Length: 410
Picture (tube, rainbow, N blue to C red):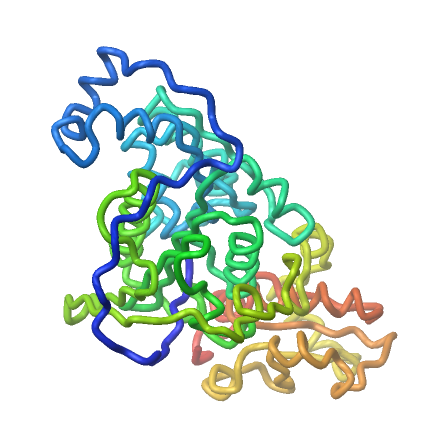
């Protein structure tokens, strides 16, 4: 899932924008064959719309769209793009289905828990619409592979849940001339915007720089299960409009949705001449990974310790030699933490490393967070920095609370 970013950009009434022209693919696709009788029946309600009609449905059949993240936003976006007849639909996600995903990630069932998200989502979408080509990219997006992955697609839908990934996707779309539909969610709120090459501001124009870990994700802050359904379908709508060149896309506008008040608002934004990627003198000329980026492979090699084993070692005679580092934010740490745990937020580790802790290379260090996501990355960074014996508390404080200390406030 994604976390939204609270901001108050200069607001003004958005002036009417002309209808977007059709966006050509980077490599023009071959002409699609005429719609078959079965396709005419399937898309009959589209064919009745003058803005779409047979020509528009043919355009969708030729379209190539990549969805980043098969999570809360990516699931409904991909579901409706597949149903609409987008001819080639890519799904990029390196994660596996977790039971906590099921209240909002509508492509999965209980039987999918533990399965790769991209592959299982591919199976669901192919079953929904066998007439399209669904491609699963079970990999992590990074600067080294973003060009090759984006090359085969003409439009990108970003449903990622990390700030660093959003910047990477945005920068690649600007540099490679790819239209982008972006959205983010947090608790009861969400936002969406679109970027089209040469036609308006990009994501960095709105948020020049925000570090990973500054904003809590769904696992840390919670999220209303139906919220990503609203924003994901907004993304699918925007993608279809951009592909067909109809309507007024969210270019230069940020759509903001508040589920508690059931209110939509919008802010008008302009391209920033000093923007690092789309400005007059850009400093970003190649996609780059955020500071502290760790590959999935690095994180998979992290040694883990269970809550029960950690409790046993803390009770042992040599417990004093074990160092506990809580990488949550200070307010989270203040609500409740393990005795003797020191607080060093992940964002500070990413920026300054481990110098302030003066970690002894031979002393065992256990990294701790709420659910295990942030501590996994901190442990990987510690290994990279030469810390000899880093361990990650598997399942985080939620696992500790369930197995050892039910009264621990989180």
